[in-house]
Each structure stands twice: as C-alpha cells, then as structure tokens.
Length: 524
Image (tube, rainbow, N blue to C red; front, side):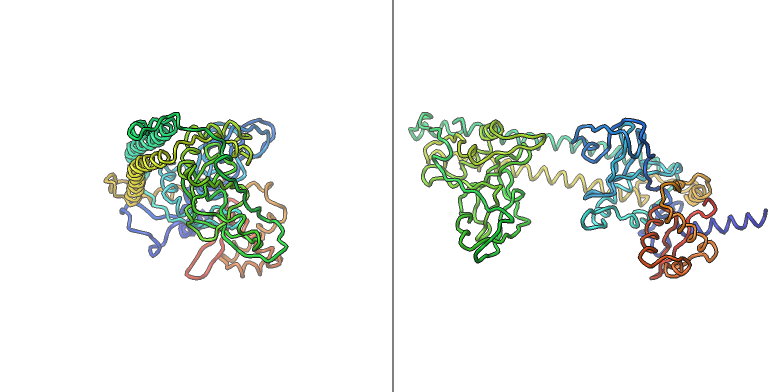
C-alpha cells in the first residue's frame, strides 16, 4: 500500500513537471496565490461523437457567423447544443463558437473541452486575448491551421476559482459598456453612408445645384439622358492564360480585387505576360472609369476613376474600362453617378443573378442611361460632392479611430486581468497550486479517453510499443524511442506526430533537447 502511494506521488510529480511553467519561462510575475501552467492542463481538443442516425444542422464557419443558411445532414461528428468549438483550419484559426443547437461539427473545427475546475469564461477570455498570436503563428501554407503545439504549451495564468469568477464578472461588465459604445459608433458610421447616398441622390436629380443653375441661367431641361456608348467608348480587358505567339513583355494589371467602390486598393498588384503588339489595346489612360463585371450585390458595377497611379498598367477581362468623350462627359461625374442609387438600381435590374452573386456584360454597361448636364454643371456637381464627401470622410476617420481606441482599451483590460491587476484578488484564498493538484488527481481528467477504435491498427500497435518503452526507460528522445520500434524513419515520425496530436504522448523541452513521455500511463 505504502509502495503504491509512493508511486502515485512520483507520477504526480512527473505530471507537475509537464504542466507547470518553469520560472525562467514565466512571462511576468503573478500574485503569490496564482500559478503559471501550460494551457494543456485546463483544456483539450477532441472530435464529436460519430453518428449517422440523426438529422441535424451542419456547423460550418459561415453558418455560425449567420452568413449562410442552415444545411441539414444525417451523419458526421455529432455535438450537443452549447458545445464550444474552436476553428483549427483556415485564416481565422483559433476563433471560438458556441453551437446553438444539436448538430454535426464541420471538418475545420474541434471540440474545445474545458476542465470542470476552471471557469469557462475565464479561459475563453484568455484564448480570445491570444487570437492575434494564433493567427500569426498558423502552420501550413496551402491550408493554414492552428498551431496545436503553441496552443497547448501556452503559459496560462491560473488564479483560484473565486478570483476567476470575479475577473470574468468585472471584465464582462466593462466590455458590455464598451460594446454598447461600439454599437453607437457603428450606428454613426451607418448614418455616414446614408448621408453620402442622400448627397449623390440630390446631385443626380438636380437638387444639389439648383441655386447654381439659377445663378448661371441654366435649366434642368438642359440635362440630357443618353446611353453610355453614345458619350463614351468601352474597352474590355486582357484574358489571363491566353496563348501568346509573338514577342511578350511583363506588365502590371488590375484585378477585380483592386477596384473598390469609389477607390482603388493597390496594395497587391500582379503582373501578366502579354504580346508587345497588344499592349496599347489594354493600356489604362488617366481619366478612364473602371467598372467591375460582377461579384457581391453591393459591389456590382462599382466605378472608380484611374489617375495613372501605376505606369504602363493593364486591366483584366473582368474589368470594363469606360473612356468618356472629352468635353461631353466628365469621368468623375460618371463614376459618382454609377455609384449613386440611380446607377446601382440600373445595374441590379439588368444583372444576371445567382444566390449571392450578380454580374453584368458589356452590352448592359453600354446601355446604361447616363444623365448628362452641361459640362460646367457636371464640374460643379463633382466639386460639391467632393467637398461634402470629404467632410463626411474626415468625421468618419475620427469615428474609426474611436473604434481602434476601444479595442486598445479592451486589450489593456485583459492584460490587467491576467496579471491580477484588477484589484479583485484575495491573497488569503487558497493557492491555485491546490487547484492544479485537484485537476491532476481527478480520475476523469479533461483529456478525453482515446477511443482505440478510431485509431488505425498500425498506430494503435505502435502506441503500445512506444508507451511500454517510455514506461520502462522514462523520458526518451525521439531518436532513442525510434530505436525501440521496428518502424522506418518516415513512418515513425508521422505516427509520433499523430500520437502527440491525440494526447497519447507529449513533448518535453529541456534546453535544446526534446523528450517524449507517455501521458497518464496509469489510465492506459
């Protein structure tokens, strides 16, 4: 009996070495009754229950964000309402969702299981605070995914449970007020867009320059309505991948992504190979108005004036170039008109539409009924719009800085929370070290018991060999463990990777050396 007790103590000490953060690795000093632990102590990642006997929604990112309709399936990884899932694949790896009902988990998710001894909201706040770190340290180039090694080894500031609850309460209270402020700010931003729409609407029904016309003896009847092709020429773009037969040259070109509503995004410009003799046909000129063929409904037909920001620049075939007749139609006047409700309504009416996309062709663009006032009034309208929109944009910039400032405030509050600087910590409460012992001592640890049935036969047999070796010899380097198996080098490391990901064995770093150790040998 005494011997077993000593063995248990030894095992516990070994596990403490795995989960505790060494003093030299502690990011900063915590209150005395807090502890630094590895995040793997308080949470784990797992799959849902495999089922094929129930019908339920399929939880993918766009659905959980409210951007896609519900899709029903009858097989997959089944999870219950309220389950927390974490995105492990894709650009936003590390993002956490709570599923609204019973259903099936998407392939890009894992179930985030949190220890019963930890306040869920406290851990979620901490993970959320590290979202930029996870995003910037993703693995994989083709399909980026969560760096699980970083996730599980992350130093986690563990306070007593009562302190966790106090921190959550005060942070939620402050964040609620800040979120209300952000909501108000976004309402103001929305009002900016509405005011811009009103400005454009007044401009193209003649209200904006009503007084100006009286002062210049011009009548509204002087306005003409002409099809676009009567007052401009239209140019289609170069097709990517087209076979070239003559001498070629590499030149920059605009894609749909570069052409936004009223401005150009030139952060990423690609080049295309084109025959020298065809360059002039697709070359952009200052004053050209760029129209997109299609995309999301709100981006349909967006027009932007080219100001020769890039020399010798071409455009792809999904961008139409409209070149207004000089002295008849001002390019900025045309661009603003296309972006007004009048222009957008036209493009939407004549577009070809699918579920979330819309497109127009060159014929429909040519037939756009353009309102054409006298040139002097066009210039006056453009000047007035520029003036009014500039005022709105400057106010908008101030509002956007407010949003950025609120985000900075949130990050600062979270930093204070995880440093124990919110003024809520009680130094007389039982140390978090006791909480660690409790977590490690419980029979039902947060690490899910591995279902052998879901591991391939080869992996399972190899895992037994590895665990037996680690039990007999203690911690081993990968090279030492390799010598205890009969696997070739490539297969060995592939299988070791899967064993680590499935929490069957863990990595322990000591200086520049890496060791492997079986997890919870007594339960395996």
